[in-house]
Image (cartoon, rainbow over all chains, first blue to last red; front, side):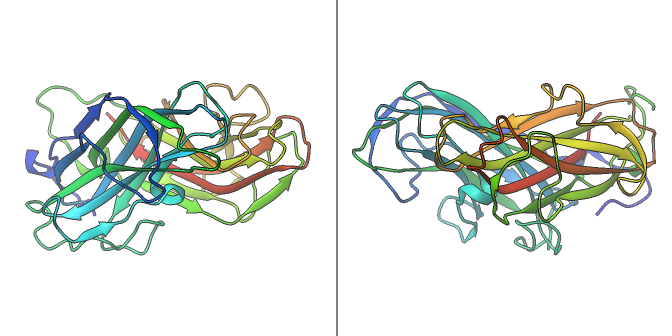
Length: 164
Length: 155
């Protein structure tokens, strides 16, 4: 939460982002995977306990019937840490329409916060020493395979920004 | 509104809380071709920062079972604590710069956001914003299952 008074630079850890444009073709995973290369960032939780996460990318389906879901996963400490937020397109992901054989590009932005009952992604983080704790966020993807494994991804990105 | 100048001490009034409201109740078989609020209403109030600027994100998960209609989502912004306040940004005129939509051919749910910079807000004032949706052709086969609004202060 924000208090009256002066703020200092330590209240604002850097916004961080990762992005990759490696072509991933004919995908068949109907469960979320990080892919290769993995697109992830380490971030420091600000004292406010709130960050905005944006997942963005581009995908297509050659058979016009498979969606691609790109969603954020957040863990404590690092890539092997406790999962704090699981990938789920409805609450923290971006999805393509599935009907298009041409690449569809877009993004999804959501608020992640801890220590509060407000919002769909609330109450996840332990805010003890919030200003120094490290977290890890990465883009995971899963696809539909209605008639065949025909989803291609050509862009995956994630942005984490401290907010008040 | 006051721009943030180099060397200026930042007070917390410049950074009120970032807020979000989200609901995943299914709103199915939509027929309205003019903007309406959806069920339940997805709304929130926020305090404008000293800069008078916020980034406002509209998010939706929508589809059309026949692959021909589109769900179009936007927001309405009021000065005050409810839709009874003073209208600042409405939905009856052009909303092309604020909208997010699903593709017309999307017969399975598609999730996407659109972010807008809203400027010239009164510093410290409370504003009310609500999520609005409509369909492009009112076919009765378009569904919206996820609606969200996110507002955060910005320099």
